[in-house]
Length: 433
View (cartoon, one colour):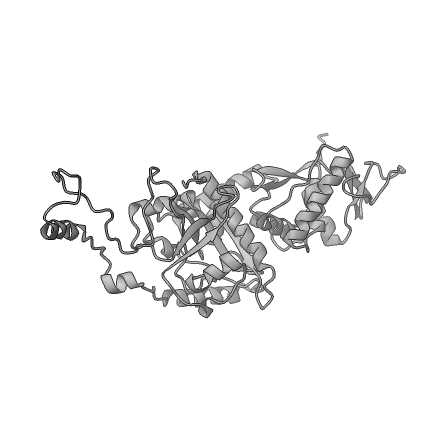
């Protein structure tokens, strides 16, 4: 008679089940709960996590797992590292702590581990990964909705990857925006149709370049060349005057977007460019993006003065620890020269694909291979399916609704860490790219 072997329990799934049942596992120094081993000790002194589950068939079951055992949660920020059980459980214990308190607690625990003589460390998760893990453990999101948890079924993971690739290649029509409390399918469909009507009625805003100069960029460098010879008689070149000097620069529609500076010019370096979404549904637009990225405070976009170009400075320690970088923020690339696209480092998006129709790379998969995608939405609302389909090239950040703004700084720091990491991958350094 053939016997069926039961699959070994998964510590990540077992932790989620224990949290739902209200019976958290117990850190111990010995895997056998019947011994006189210390229980409920510090995570630095404990070596095992014992789960106590109860069923009608087997009664109370004690399942120990080594705290150093790796789980299915993969931290991208830590170099695609499978998180150990101690880091997962510690993250859940600090789920309600802000970023500063969580980082300080992580450092203190690592120091305890070192003093205990253990060659182990707890991984400090970035904001997006910490939020994803705690939401999944609390049962707020399904397993397939987590970006960082590997599936138990390899075929299921392969099918999910294929589905993501197909969705990325297809692109999609528009964004499916639903509130988190719309459980009724009919209500969700009505909400989706209503938002599609709103998006269809949106009018793309022009800027002063398109209004005053038209869509076509005019180059008057030949006029300057002609009349400099006419009025001055000869070129201002060398003493021989045999060859006319070329103008130092040509007129472009937007002088703030300077082309990359050659290495021969000391003290000058190209300025990275960040593109914003012109959509009226975007939480971050030109009126409020600067206060958000510089001061770490979110304000409604109607409260600021609109402009078609902004500048801000930011020190990125991994690229230039002593000298701040100057960033350019625009929401319309219509006047871009070809070399400007080499300086693009980030794109804020709402998930609407019409935003990319004037871009050099109009396919999202190709665009987010050259620059970091950033989706900023309200905390508690579902992330659009199009954004999920674009994969890890787009980071997701969520800000609190209402007047409580003390968590904004934490979100902004995560956004800058994402931009800094992508710029480092692109080859930006102390002297520019």
